[in-house]
Image: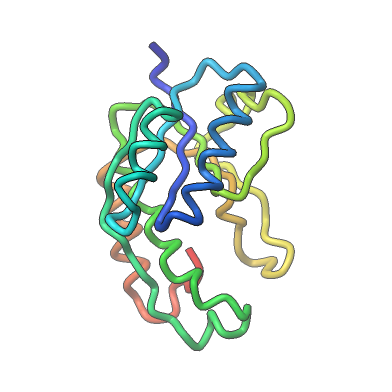
Length: 162
């Protein structure tokens, strides 16, 4: 069994549908890595059971919100505050390395080579060049890193959209 995993997040049933597409597309391209979905308590029981059929592991996590309405309004995306919840992915210490994929990703070819990248790897955000895009990133789970990220995220104006 691989100690590496693809990880995604679903904070509601709508995002869970996207997570199912992520899982299906990863399986279709033949990944041998574990598939993990983190979910909040907002998901319906039916959706939780559906996710359990597609993912190797379903992990319930605490929802984290930036509560930065002012900056999120610049993007016209107030719902992005809860994307801070993805910080919980650093708690998955049973895996040596993970690739986080947002639930709006459609994998069209094998991307297992991402696991060869160093921690921390991510693409720059086109709209905010001083930031990275948190939709796809490579990381090593660590409770210490999780604590530091939560501490940083709770500082005023640290980040606003996860």
